[in-house]
Structure formats: structure tokens, C-alpha cells
Image 1 (cartoon, each protein chain N blue to C red):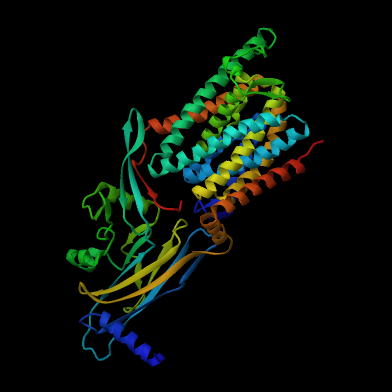
Image 2 (tube, rainbow over the protein chains, first blue to last red):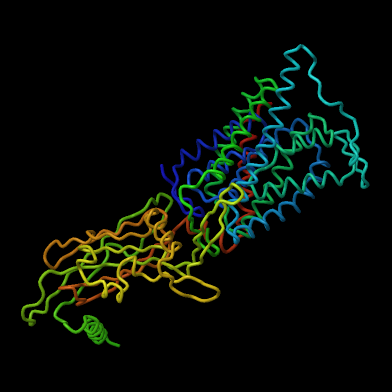
Length: 308
Length: 258
């Protein structure tokens, strides 16, 4: 069944988009991530312009992270103070990201920057995840206890001024690095159409020593808040959010996420991280090939003006 | 102005347009003047039909007729960009801005253009894609660039998308004076006003021409969404965000496991 997308200005097969939503939702539920980094390239692949894809996926990620956040809220596994501090940085970052997005579009370089950011970010995070989880798997094979870095150890930036007590997470650190992390995630998210959960979770665990118990719930709250603000900003400045596309994606996404979460619970943590790392790395590689290989057509056209 | 008066004026205009050899009149119309884009829109086909009316008083008249119909869509500024390898990756390095090229251009004819009329006539009447002016913006100046690879790329890309086309056998004569042509509009045609210009040729000369038009509009829900997104971006964004939160909430309630 074909349906015409009013903002993307192309007809798409509803069941195809729904299936993409389900598949990405399954993966996002399994690994506890938003899945934007998979959804945006898939949409570009079926013919949605990169700008519309990025803007509409922010809406999709807002929905899936909100449903996840509610589940963690019921379990009381969210650090509200931490989420709000991250958000303060995140909103500034999103606004900067949307502004840069708009400017890059006028310079004909948006697609390049989206491509480059995907390559850099995904390959780095992919390699880190694969390395870390492989070490953990080898350690457990050798019969040694699974050992993470000792929590409680201090890094220099924890001692900066403006110290805040994050009660649920039981950490007492400077607000400056927290704001900075929020800013980076908001900025990257707005440009790449990703929630940034796969970046935020390791940053909070390794840099801020936030316990695993509160980290995923808190990350989901931040993701949904930044994605909601990015949706509104994208809609108000670039008029590129396709509500019909976003709705089909989010319906598939939230359903897929439920099944994914079930599947994820049956796999051990380090294996899950290894799989996620390989997936992230593969997507990064795919973007790298696209940048390096000679494109089929050196020319491309773009309409100027308010319309997409 | 009375009805009869208006009709008389229209007739005079029509005859005046018909040129020096006013022995033929050209009448053309479309099956549909309003194409509505709804949620199940995947492109549409319109039929242009018409007839050549010979003046009974005229002696002899012409032999075989030829028709060239040019359909021009709404004009919008457009950029053509070219990629080049820089530091190992492919980057858009050069671009040209085209000043209001047609977003849709179809040239339908009864025979190849070269067989219908001379190259000189084609250029003068701007017949066919090659002779359609596509002015570019050059240092705040507007001009036509001949042999421009960017222009060629624009035409090629638009052809690939089905937005530009030149079909030498699209117009068929059902009788020596009655003709029809199918105008196919792909799914991604832009909305707006389309102009249909029909020219009648005989023995290589233009002997009559007429105009028609149609409009492609988004209706109902599609129109509502586009208007909301363009005119009330902030409200639209807030509504979309609310929709996302609502969907998320519904999902968490529906799949609640405690």
C-alpha cells in the first residue's frame, strides 16, 4: 500500500516503512539505544532526502525513548537532577546543531558533514565497544571474575567548581563536565538525527562514574527531551519534519522495541555489547565506502527555498 | 461585456493568434484541469485532446499536420552541484544556481522535432528541451551558458526523475484532424500551475497555436500538513512532538508487564 508523504514529497510503501520501524525498534529495544543511527541511513536509502530523514527521525526517537523512559520511571531508576543538568547543556547543543545544519544546507555540504560525522563517530564507538566487550569475554573465558574499572576513583574534572549532588546516582561532582556532555550529545544529535544514547551511556559510566542502575533510564530521559526540542527546532526553522513518516516509523518502532527488549534479556551483557559494537562499526564502514568510492553521478540537484 | 461580445473577442484573439494563414483553427483541451494529490497519490496521467478545424472557405489547405505540445510546470530556483575528490573523499566543490527553471517540462510531438520544422524555427520558438532557456546566475548577473556541463547535468537528472521528457511519438492523430496525447505526471511532480502550449505545424511552418492549463494541488490532509509545516512551523513542531510523546505513552501502557 503506497502512501504519499506530504513533506518528503514522495510516495512510499507503508508496510516497508513499518517493517523498517519494527526492525530498528527491535534492535533499539535489544541494546537499549534509540536507533536513530540505523534509521536515518535506511530512510536515505529508500529515497528520502537526508535533511528530511534526519529531521523526521528525531521525532521517531522522541517517541521510542519516551516509552522506554516511562518503564524506567516506574522502576524508579531515573536520576532527575542528572537528566535536567544534562538537558541544560543539551538544549544549547541542539540549538547550535540545528543552526549549523541550516547553514550547511545553504553551503551544499550538509550531506558530506552527515556522512563524515557518521563515519568518524560510528567507527570510533564501534571499535571501542568491540575492544571492550572482547576483553570482557576473554576474561570470563579464562575464568577470571568480570571486572570493571573501580568505581569511585576520581578524574581531574570531577573536582571543578559548581559541585552538585546527584542523589539517585550517588555521585557528587562538578556540574561543568555534565553540562559539557549534554552539550556534545545535543549538538551531535541535531546534526545526525540520533539520540546519542550509545554515546551517552558509556560517557556517563566511564567519565562520570554513574552506576549502571540509573544510567540507562537517565539517558532515555535526556534522549527524549533533546529529541523533543530538536523536533520543535527543526520544524520551526527548516520545515522538514514529516509527521506522517514519523508516525509510521514510531508505531513500528515502539512495537519492535518490546520484542527486542525480551530478546536482549536472554543474551549476556558483554556479548550484547560486542554485537552492538559490530553493528555500529558496520554502519560506519558503509558510510566510509560511500564517501571514498566514486559516486555513480558526480552531479546532484537541490531546490532552493523553503520547500524540501 | 455581454456573452456574445466576449465570444466575439475570443474568436478574434484566436484568429489573430493563428498567424498569417488563418485557414486552420486549433482547439485543445485536457481531460482534467485539477489534479488532486491525496494520500494514495502515486502519479497520474492526463490526456490532451484536440482537433484542427479547417476553414470551409479556404481552398486547398495543408497536407499532413504536426502537433508539438509543451507542458511547463511551476518554476523554482535550483542548484546543480558537482562532486570532486578531495583528500580521498568525494565533496561538492562546484555549484551553479539556475534562475527559475521549470520543475516539469514535457515536449510531446507527433514526429521528431527535426522532421516537423527547421532547426532555426525550433530555436526561435524555443521548441524542445535543448532550445528551452535555462538561465543561470553568474556573479549577480543572469545569463544563458552554452555547452554548460551543469546545464546538461540538470537536464539529465530531471530526465532520470521523469520530470523532463521529450517524446517524439506521444501525439497521435486519430483522424487527419483529431489528435490526442497522454501527459504522464510522475509521483514526485511539484504542486502548482502547469501551462500547456499546443502548436500546429504544416509543411514546416507554424500555422496555429493555443494554450491550456491545469493545476496540481494537495488536498485534504496532505494540504493541511504542508500548510501547517510551512506557515506555523513552531506549532507544527509542538504538535508533532506531542504526537511522539502520546505514541510513546500508549506503547508503554499497552505493553506494561507489571
